[in-house]
Image (tube, rainbow, N blue to C red; front, top):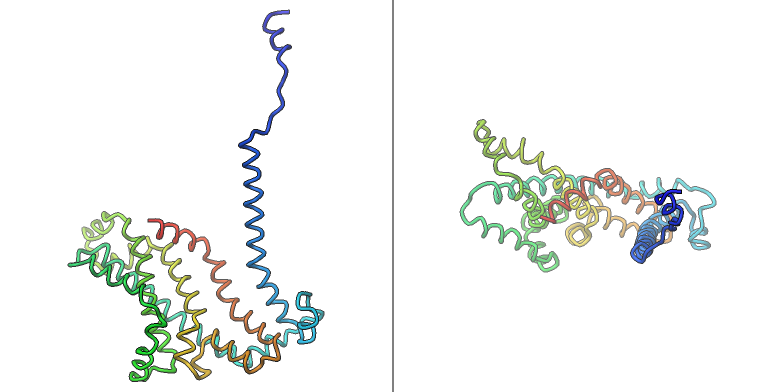
Length: 294
């Protein structure tokens, strides 16, 4: 027997040991997954509870609110739709779409001017725009009400469009500016050499490059306009001008004894935003990470 063979025979294979770092890593993963699962349950369970209660009767709702409905009453959704939810939904869609398009376009154009064009006192203009973030909506309610009454816009959805656009431009400009500021200036110079104007460069080159942050700002503006309550309550009183948050409140006060219909209206109000977020969540996270992190 050779020396090499004797050495190989005397060496015993050692069993893999779980070190301290590996054990702590496993504990950390278990804790992280448990936390994420618990957070998902906290978020998803109220939505499922609201959906299931929208199919119940009042007796089932008060008898066992946490059980599944014995019969799926689809007429609750039709009743909610016919009792005003359709009008509230139409107004919310109109106000949200118009204010979102206006806010994003104006903010993107302002961010382009602040980051890609040499203008006098650009730092001062940036400070003025971002200073709008310090203005609380509740503080400006009284002068705004008087101003819109004088302009004849009070109790119209036009007032909400103007307010949702004006109060969100500073924040949206801040996000888009944070993204644009790191785009290479060589792109603008190459476009100018090819004979492109500032307008063409903005529309055909810079905006497509800012797609992730634009999607993020669109989703943030949609969530704000869709769920905003203070302005919608103060500046609208007629059913034709009320958005979903205020409309659902009036629906609850008028038909408070029919809670399944109210839950059905809440589900109808939540569906468009949930679908939009699920469809654009990849761009939303990427845009926020790239924009805020810069």
